[in-house]
Amino acid sequence: MNFVRRFSRTERSLHWVNATGFLLLLATGLILYLPRLSVLVGRRPLIKDIHFWGGVGWISALVLVALLGDRRGLLRTAREIETFQPSRFNVGQKVNAVLNAAFSVLFLASGLLLFFGERDTRFRFASTVVLHDGLMYAALGLLVGHLYLAVIHPATRHSLRGMTRGTVREDWARRHYPRWAPPAD
Amino acid sequence: MGVEPAPKRYGRGLFLATVAGGLSSLAWARPVMSRVSAALGPVESLVPFVPQGWRIYTVSGSMPKFDRATWRLEVGGLVDRKLSLSYDDLRSLPRAHQVSDFHCVTGWTVKNVHWTGVRLHDVFAEAKPQFAAHGLQFVSAEVPYVDYLTLDQAHLPDVMLAYEMDGKPLPREHGAPLRLVIPEMYGYKGVKWLQQVNLVPQAEPGYWEQLGYDRDAWVGRSNGYGS
Image (cartoon, rainbow over all chains, first blue to last red; front, side, top):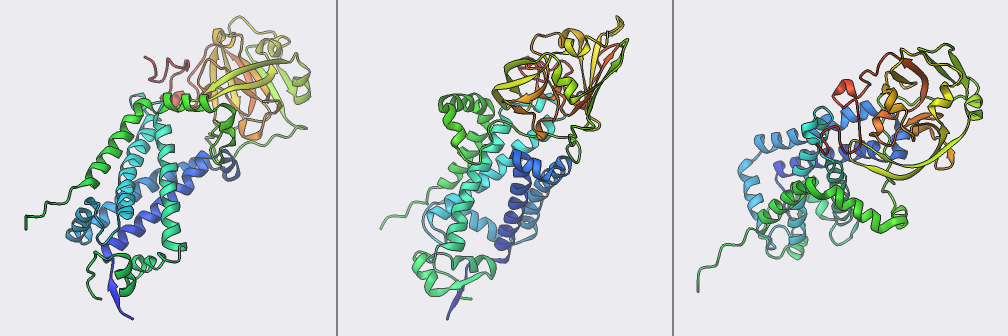
């Protein structure tokens, strides 16, 4: 069986750093947000610290991976995603990537406003918490769809291998991405 | 064959539009949300996984536990007679009932909360307050949470020490067995897990006020809102 290279080491690192950070923030965020979980877990000050510093760490780690990794390759990938024409990625994947990037910026901005708003009225807005919560629901929706296609749906779940080992079957790539000319592995 | 036009960068547009839309929502998200939830009405409670307004904020590692046998409300400070009320003593005082909205300074609101409890003048009737007192101190069992009201604020007609919420004994996460309710002010004034009420010479900064929140936490006209 022939395999072709789908994701570079930098791309995979970026993906998994992003996934780890997101899940940590989702878990701690839900404990802070859902009354039943708040009561069950308690320790709110600790969870709050983990959530805040987890968020700072998440964004810093993403920036670090991008800076220390294959910057040129990432830039090429970003330009490819921008076009919304099927290539190495289909249009759904491109929209998902763009929305997730935008959500990260908004999560960071609203999260910082919540943090500094607790300390200074100039940063306090009644809608910040609505934005932060709304983003969570939107991002969770994208994540559910993403996980279904990457882990469960039989026709597409082979793609997970691309994100773990970096390579996928050549015949699978041809079938799913006819406009992509993959480099052989 | 003509030159193929460069592919349009829809991705950049979507990214910028999403970020701009999200940031602009800082100006409209809350009013829109309150309209939506007003339009949904009772249907809203059928939506799974969306908390019905309340969020549970605490400042220490664990929530105080209520033991009916040993629990006491200490009433003291500038009074002629200090009191130590048991839970049953408290419940034998004249019952008051009210329906009021609860506003949190972080932006969420719970409408039409049913509170049952006692009025402060009924609690202090037997204690005989002294003239030097101009403030009230509310001490929580959740150390170090404490807050204060001026006597004028404490005299507002719908200020209450509540032991029931929405027809049931106050749940642990809402401050069982007793919390302060003052609907005109943001929720951080409403000390939960109340264990001491003291008359003091004057109101002082409470827990959140020492961290920069307003002492007079009027809903809609304090803490940077509506100024």
